[in-house]
Image (cartoon, rainbow, N blue to C red; front, side, top):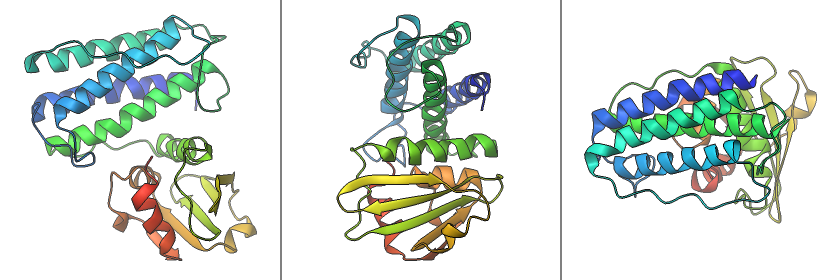
Length: 251
């Protein structure tokens, strides 16, 4: 996907997140994050958007702490969220293509990283906000959702921090049924972070796996982030793999 596509998705989902937060109210529980109320979700996203903006507008060679939120009354929360989101979108739109700044996952460029990461961060939490507000989830474009699965598998779970480690080696195949060539084979071991291989359609190696998980890209995306129940996906093979994912896989 192009950087402009990520920024546009960020723009749309940030607005939808704020709308849902406004509708739900600050005390609404957030189902996917049981310790949070909507107030906590808004404060988290407002802080993260401002943190990301700093890396784009004031390039850094090393990580910096996420800023603390100011003291805000409940009726100030959503406007504060919208303000930080607006500045992030503007920063990404106007940033030079050769931006050099700190990142924490592989990407074609630092600008591509921050546009992609903030688009997915915002989309997942937009779903949280809409679930908390009790409104229908806004559909995600299949290609964007498949990209989010790719980021989760080849980015987050490639890091040493991944807890997706079974008792014995397992091989998992995932496929987005509505997106061409959106398939991955994940090699799981007890003593190392998962190793993911993007698997071309029809690759016979996918047949020799312990578990296969298939579904529409959006269902895969939200389920793997533990935002959807697993009954929207087709799971075959070793059931211990999705059970492990439910416990630790959503990061």
